[in-house]
Image (cartoon, rainbow, N blue to C red; front, top):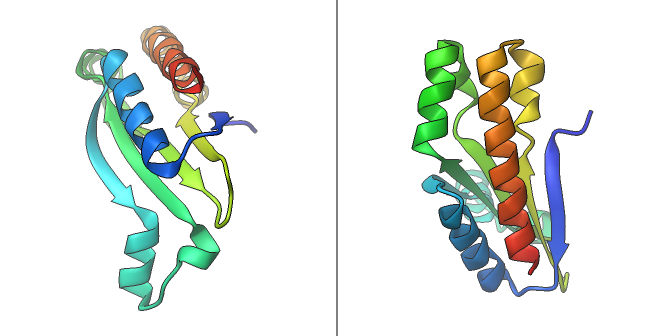
Length: 135
């Protein structure tokens, strides 16, 4: 089952992260959380995880209007929020991958027309953000 939208871009790590943040903001998403997976694994596991993970950040993106509509339609939907966006780069790679959750995953879990409308809107915005990152 596919549950993400993915692009791979010929961008340096810092450029890819910055463009992702900007593209999300242009689509009305704020970044509520940021998890530096490499740093977290290194800290929690007591070793450098860079060789196994590479650069890897998870951005917890939220569009407040969409979140409000979704939670109003189905309160349990909050368990699936925010929309996670991953920026990752394998060790030694020259390209960076950006992945967003496919909001249609929520529709498969919650068979609700109002949730479908929110997911369609979020889906369009996340795809537009990816298109913008790709240039």
